[in-house]
Length: 320
Image (cartoon, rainbow, N blue to C red):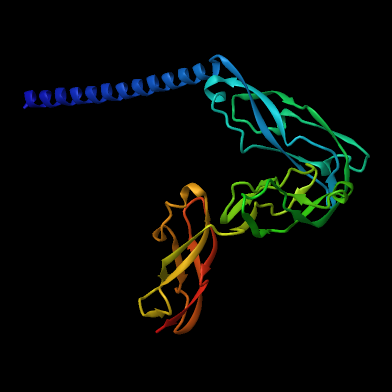
């Protein structure tokens, strides 16, 4: 009995010793991991510092009914310094430096705004070294709004024997706002010049407005949509027996004819290459209800071919 008790005691002691050793090993591993993490952290913080320059957008909050009446930069250059690991991937494209002018003596004729490093929000471990420009001098003036028409500017001419028979664009006006004396001078908003040379057929182009005084804001600014139709003055080729393709939800319809002729203008070197099947004449029946309808025809042409006329230009179609 005594030997059995001694064996049990010995076994228990060994088990306790193993548990103790296992716990000690875990503590050692935790301490080692912590030491490595701290070492890496200090290595990152103390690695060779790096200086980089980034742009930060300026946003000014003005008092009610007042606008800035001087040319101001839209961005400042911010030189920052910090650990290479932090700085080299620093992205400030979404960062804004917001200055509330209501906190400044804006009732004076002019007043200075100095840019302080604290105005730039940066991650830990990165510091602002320099801001350029460091200061701007501002003056405020009464803000007004008005609607201004858009003028379409074109250069060049459409091709020989072609004519621009239709041109439309939208929007035709914008609301602008800004300081009183700057707004008074603006009577038109011009588009960037549109070169008409090379245009043919029907189409739509997106146009930009010419830059204007930076003190003026254009509300709801968008591209100008320009729609045009160019037709030849005369035809030099008539294609007969061009089949009409109908767009329809079903086949229960009847047209008074299935083929038309097409008058086109085409370069001399291509005249012998164009055949009726190159021209796609379309009649759209999709939205039509039962009954007799007059359906206008449209044509899709190869590049360099200009449509003068479809004969006839419309067909009588019965939807059953």
